[in-house]
Length: 472
Image (cartoon, rainbow, N blue to C red; front, side, top):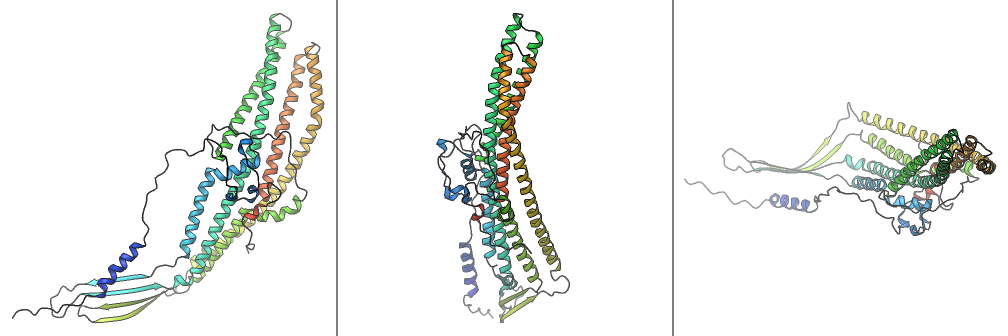
């Protein structure tokens, strides 16, 4: 008897639903595109003519007139550094990573879709393929989602404030290098003049020795003075080359670019009279301390998430299936983790210990900051007193030198005593240059620690207002 042909089965909804779902998911997927690494330097070969000042994240630098063609002052150097420094560009790219992580934290996890197909290998009447389709979701992700978002938001703010702190430090370092380059230029000019005078004196001494008018001892003294000043001059040129290269590197310029820096003369900085009263307040507005607070708030959210995760994880699912005899079923499933031994106690302990460590880090940074402010304040006042004392004695020493020079040229003063006076004057003049530089370094370091403005109108903390509470 011929086999009875099977009735044609209607097209299953699964055969349409599954491929359609796959195509829909694929349509929303991102595509891969390679980005090769650069093969050459992108350092600029000239100073930018303009800078988008409103794009500068530091308010103290946004309101300063910038015209590189007329020369750069210390604030102009800081502006160009913040805009073009290669390290800051790299850190800003890392801020994009933190932003992407915050975006990812806002996204809810996807549900899980399961499908299975079993084909019967036995022959028999009424047999068909067994199919199962299930959809499930972990409900625990909804419970701790808010804590995860809060943690990511705190990390993003911390990264943003860390970047602001590095931008502020880099800008202030550029200002310090600006004054260092000017000081090195002053030293080179001073030593060049002294070396030229000493060279001419040594050549005259050689001529006088050939005529028998002076002794070999006098010539040796002039030779010693000439070689000493040449050594100082080469060291000053080396220092100037180093400081110029460092400043160009901060500005993102090629090493051979010559900067037109506005001279500062013999001006020295002063401290605002309210510095001591404001120190304890302003230091709490520093971006690095705000970043530590943001990191602490992020850790608070992690502790909260760890505590929420101690409760049983619940997964809820629905499924539709049929067996090989084409018996169809519709049901749901519930999966719960039993909190018997683990109960997430280990993770809670880790997150609480991390929070305690972050609190101590914040306290240590705050204590160190106040100590550094006091130290720099004392250092500035001592340097200021030393500079004023030197300025008071320099005119007398210069007068003594002029009188010694006349007596030496008239043959009434021995060469060794004259060279000692000349060397002393040169040393004090270079000391004055070094003290002016040290005063600017101390002043700028204080500005860095306290978040002082560079123009007395806009404070650094305006970039990111402090809205967090102190860690507790």
